[in-house]
Image (cartoon, rainbow, N blue to C red; front, side, top):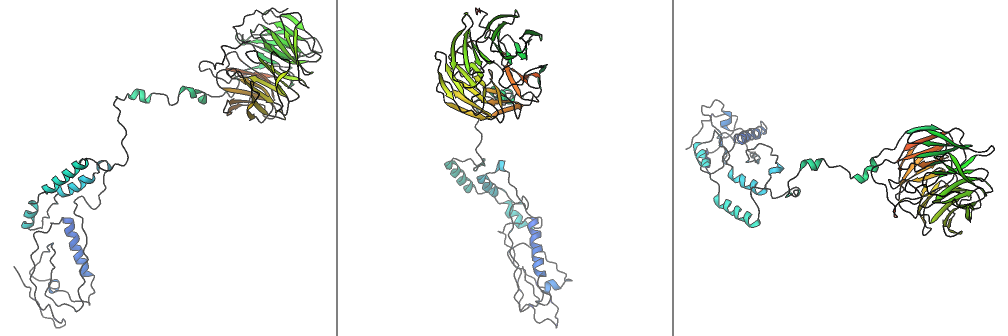
Length: 536
């Protein structure tokens, strides 16, 4: 079918098209277009015609004859629409071919990762049939409706997927491996109700006290670094020396009693409870050592012989060791009349630190000559002598859960805590405490040690062992802490300072069993030792 358009002759325009080309029928085998693609193609065609200058080329007669009774509809095909009007000598620039998407899902497609499948996306593109435009011819509609998927291609893809071990309805590429599935049923209650941290880390969550649980007055206490004026018995009684008087405070009942008062011109220099808590030894400034029965409130015996004050003492069952200002250490057997059984001499200055190991095999001593001596109970010669401290050594403490571990602390010019192996004499660790060390107490619940300090911090510090990490500090006194003592259950620490205050701190919270030592029980301490000493 062909048709022609009548053209008016215009003198200003040279020649129209020399020949009239017939309109080519669009091919029926071309794929139909969507309404969106149809509108895009029409607008592209119109814009390409408008881009030409007005005087560059003559428009076709069809375009110029707006009043033509014949109106042509545009068909989408690969055939060109040619008019019969005059043609300029300048060749017509063809419109740029644009690529159009064949998808019916819109201009932009955002894939879903949960349903992405490389194989299925290619398969579904062949199964989908694009909708036919309402303006298309009936022949195009019939051709599109007769389109069927290629069964041969589907069978081939299925066979390839089966050979490769792939499923067409699942993802081929995964973003990360899936979590392993448990064969057992999951109990959500037990899964989410379990503790976040194991029970062994409970000590990391405990809070250190910021204020004392109890405060007692201690008027008249002597501000002397070398004296030991505080001790706590296994019967839960606290003894404190205030100048000439010795007071006993019962922690269970809260009662306070005065046990003794020394002679004029003398004062109490050191006190120490016996292992059974029945007797308290008192060292005086004139060199005498007295033993008092706390329950009866009476003096049992007095042992003389020292030439100077006795500022420190330590019990090993029936043996009482006393350190003198002249540097000597006497061992008294309280069961016999001739009480002095041996003497240890190696210090050149006052002995201010003294403590027996729990098994009674070794004795540690510290003096104002900056020396630490470790004595064997069977010899009067020190087994080890350590001179690492640069100041007086008053603070001494044997570890209750590691028998051969000894901790020592130095004075103002040293400010260090050293840890020693009592078997080999080797120094294991050291801590720079930053201030004068006045006392050391090992915890029986945790693997920790608490130290009390004087100038310049006047505080308490808690250290982990063997990591040597400082777990915390307690600012409790206005002046330097003179002495400290630990309660029988190992939870409360009593401290006394020159500010005349006796304070009690809950530093070691009880969480269960105490840390056990290598031997069964602690010798020379506790209620397991009855009041059996025959003191004469």
